[in-house]
Length: 515
Image (cartoon, rainbow, N blue to C red; front, top):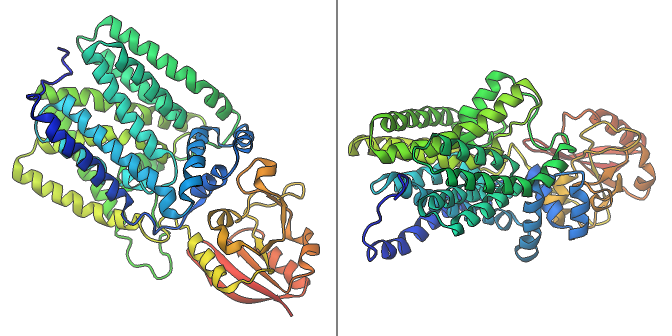
């Protein structure tokens, strides 16, 4: 038997226990992510999901030729799901919560195979379910949670293939890895981490290394069309250029122990942002437990060494490669895309907790839960998605606007050659019901016609002909955008006066009526 395998208990005991334990772990992890997932407003990335998922296959394919190719498989799956479940916050985010549950079961199974019997498997699964990056991904209508589930199960299948030396697990590993890489191209770095483990792992047969190499090559080949399309789509992968300090903070804190910045700092009416110190303290505690796990692996039982051997390359290599490339070349790092590394962190956290005595373990676990609570609470606030207030914008218009009135979505960028490519129109994609019956006076071409996510617009000053028949126009905009003053001047010259106004954390809605 391979050094990576663990001796199974008597066959009569484990199937009965697993028949209850595994579904229970998956259900609890899914419920943690699903709790309150309907509260935060939809935001930019989720509006992109709605826009892409609402297209027929031909329109979606046309869009992917020059935009969001890296999300194509997720959009195709979302097209099927939203046709059945709709596009409410809960319906959109529920599949991600389910994926977190599937991933948590995978963490438990993987920890059992690596660490063997004992507390590590349950501790690792619990740590995974409570990691803020996981609870963020589980309440997000994007591909992060699904890619994480595929990453952990691909690793389970690889360990099983090395243990059993049969063709079936290798085929399953290839299929799982290829699907994960198409869903999130960064999972190609997980394959590199697997290869690193096989190089470092003692006793790996040459035929197993060659088998892995063939599987990884097949997965990369399947992913290559997505990579070729993505190379032509600048700005599709990473954030703006980050300095070394800011990048380090994002990796050490945000990437695992915070998720995205959950609220607008100092927003009106908001008290102390307790999630900020809690996330930092949680990161300190988490990395301390990782250090304990590595120290245990250096001198402790074989299970701890196996766990570290598989988890450490998985945790470190993808982030190190992308962060290093982002510092010396083009920006590629986006913390959201590294959710697939959270199972590796959870394995080390479980191993670190198991190294403690029973009483210290209980104290540390309780402290970790105490620190997780304010971060998780911040992720479930109405404006949790980077301050997005679109739900409130839509509700205000539902209460105050009337069919037949006009709406103007403010320009987020200055027009180029008479065309505005970025506006606040995405709010109407996320919440279309409240915009039904309102005339979009600057719409030049809808999204499906031009193959983007929100369509193209004319400048407001060139759309006065569409305003001629309206006595009321609702302006949805970001207060600090460059065209605000010019747009107000255009409306004033056309005979409109400012009326009612609503201001949220990011956006404002202003009513203009004819004098």
